[in-house]
Length: 502
Image 1 (cartoon, rainbow, N blue to C red):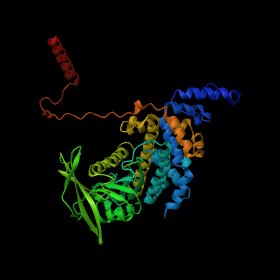
Image 2 (cartoon, helix red, strand yellow):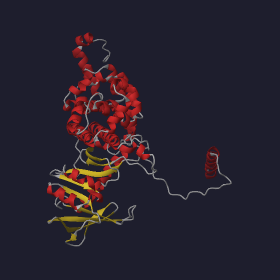
Image 3 (cartoon, rainbow, N blue to C red):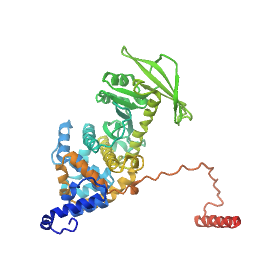
Image 4 (cartoon, rainbow, N blue to C red):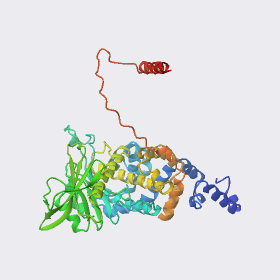
């Protein structure tokens, strides 16, 4: 039922009046145009839009980004040794999405709910997960990110680029946490079992992970993956990384492909000073100095800048200064700006923190590296969906109300609490029409739904830093205290103090 109209025939008879009422009521929410989706959504669907728009938006984006036949085609063209008989790749994606977003506790629990739909044994599901090639997981992240990029560009919020005319990419490595010792090869060792590691690439301007380089060997160095990263470097790319990525091969590889870099200097990298350090200015936490240096590799010489930030307080490793290398001309970015851009690396570290704490990316029971890497890549997809959600909310409510103020934890908790009930009330048929809409119209619909979001329900609540006080010593004669008595004692002291002041 829409606005009290009880039947289709009644709606047809009153069509002009109905549209007028819909448009009038919708303007109360600040919309600038007639909402397309109200003309065809069911009343139950509209109810979820009004009461849990966050869940509806996430599920709608999943419908457009994770299309079954496209996922299966992606698997067919990417997998080298894998094959499909009865269990489709799209089914694995659907199952892992439930676990990663914490709407189900494990693959086993998802299997119990979907056994009839899956049509194969649980053993077959785990066998498929354990053999899933890392290239397939990588392609999944790349493909979904490209679709979300279209949505982000379509909603068109005016967020200034970190550095105009450059595509800023921040890369960092991540080691998956140790799994349980369920595999036979792990039962005779007490050491932590690492199922793999990866390098993730965060687009600083889009705010989503656009690429990932998974590796099954948890003990391999990040540098072993750099040749694969170099294959993706394009002209006007600006790569920001820590000192683990400071190798001659990587730096000169970026240059040869027309890219730029801001990378923290590693002590092992050979260099020659051209001039002395010159003071450039002040930033939060230190002073900035700069000098020209010469790098050489395989007979090729490169003049670049070496920027040194002398810190007011030492790092946790006891270092008093940080040296950064860059080939960006000073006319494009001065030394102070370069040092500030390097500090944007915290964004990718925050990404890993959100993926680990908010999404179920490290499933302890998945000991096989390929299954563990697939779950991590699915968590990156989930992160991208929520990052795109924040962009949509920013386009409607304003960047100043979203950036750094919305909690990913509260957003995911809202989805977790509503998702299963919504999918029971709204079966897959209710969502299929979204797949028929072009991304421009789809983005407009998402913005319309975003107007119903109550931002105050999702704002973060940062704790104040604790005051450093000396911890009272433990008294074995008084091992316990009564909290109620201490509170009452404090209350009585406060009353007596007020009485004395009067």
